[in-house]
Image (cartoon, rainbow, N blue to C red; front, side, top):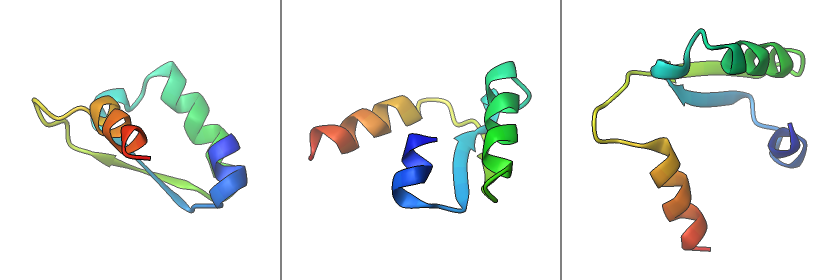
Length: 60
C-alpha cells in the first residue's frame, strides 16, 4: 500500500499466473478498499515482471 499512498493509482497490472493465490486475494481486497482494480495480463513464457522491475530500478 506504500506505493498507492505515494502515487494514488487506480489500476494495478499483474500476471495472471498469480490470480487466485492467497497473496493476490489479499492484495485485491486491500486495493479494492481504495478503489484500485487489478487487471491480469496473460502469462507469457520468457517475460518476467520481476526482471522488468529490476531493469526499471537499475535505470534510476
